[in-house]
Length: 212
Image: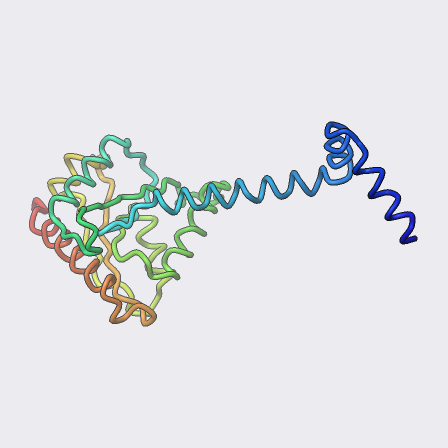
């Protein structure tokens, strides 16, 4: 057996380079493809991590109504102009993430189910302290959190100036602001404490601008 292996190695060495590569590809094609894909995934993940912005304030907006990217950007500008740089990176960044689904119907489509699962996971993580929601999602958040005392504020901000001007809810449509307390796992976390100060700053402005 050892002689056969030695003979095979010697024969391989004697092959022209092109034939060596063809032989290698024949025997290791799957391994090579898998390795190449794995390397691409690693590189892509590293690039995404490098590009990811560490926001000073995240607001998750759950609604059945669509809001244009342009108007969401305007709302983000409102947020950025009224908060502080809590991560110390020299830049003030805020992001409103819109999640659109209609959960009021008797039967939910796949998108609505996926959005509800995303919301559950987000609430469980305790990473987001500020939410905006329509009536259906507001009730769902209250149902998920139950009697946990996680919700600090639930206020109808439909008539707040910036909401009316930028988010432009339809007549009779409600937009609620919900702020959450720190979960036990993040209590005392300096970034969490600082981000909640930003939440409270925006909360105060919204509440003061509600048109009675």
